[in-house]
Length: 500
Image 1 (cartoon, one colour):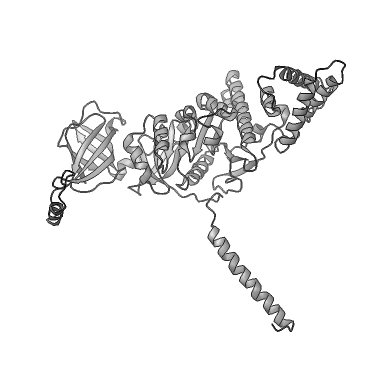
Image 2: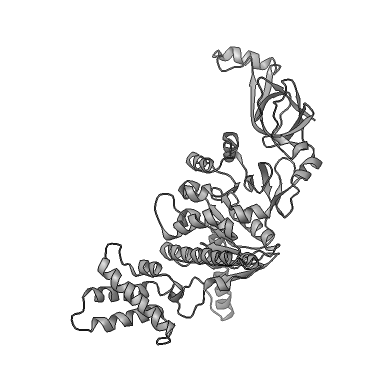
């Protein structure tokens, strides 16, 4: 099927065409010239009429011209060149000739393009439902992924489809679940392992505990006493003098002994008060009987850290603690030269509400470790997926390290600009399509796919929470229940002989 004919000046990256029938944005086309069969994507379309151009200001003249028919109507579009089908999709070295016909790409060729070694099926082409869109799993795990969309565009469904596909490969997936959407989920390809948001202080670093104890950077004397007590507590545990349980209480007890000594500094009391306060404030975080969280991770499971009941500061502590330990563990395995151990420590981390955990305009511990894993994780088997409905508030450095993107509907221009600045392969024409995407439709691009793609994401077949609440039905049903209860009570009174 002929889509159009190349007109004007053509280039190695794009061609303009004129058509007499309306193609669709996102459709794949082929252009054959100089012995090449070049694949392209329709990225822009406009309709026009030479007689009804914008410079005509006479309404009656416009009315008469339009009544005569649409003989002068035209369709003009732009095709982005993706590569030579016969040369492993390498970009051609010569542009197409003006006058060359552009044909709709056939399904068989497209199915071949979307055939990958380790497929993850995201859905089907928006414009050709008979073509499955498979992306490669390895680049997702090693080169990171961002899933971005406005609220209600299908982001959670996309995450669920991705998780279920990864579980089919026995991959350990770890979700920082900010809203409790996945703790009761049902995935056809694997189980759910819910991990409590608890930390044993004995596994925390000095700087992590110092932050929770709220010793400021300029409180040098308090920090010195706390550091000294921290080291003494570690030594007592190693020497078997003290129990390793309740590490913070052990630090407090050491400071208490020092405070009773003659001539002791009153700053010790200040540190004790801060430790006491932190044990109260973070009583829902500290657990002296909890093991290292990383030892709780199961393969072929989605490991869900339920953060729905904790505040942002606790969530930040947990994220930084887990990512730091995971990166250090993987680095240690890499330095040992044991490749199997390194691969066994591989984890794919999914961070819901990435704009909270890695904010763009303020610092946080979680943001620093997200940035480090984004930069270094691929060398040590750690994958990262940032999920957000507010891309403009996600840290730009972390987002720019996401070499794969699934972008659903985005309307706000600032969100669009932020995403485009973080992605080299997102053209302005594709950006312009984001507001017109329907629920569940997405632009997919990056190393996981050979070509940018408009996809209709599959509907997740399992069960999960997180959909919008049906508030109207709830109150409507409650009204009906109240009426039924009144009828029941009236019947009981009649049965008892009361006449009202």
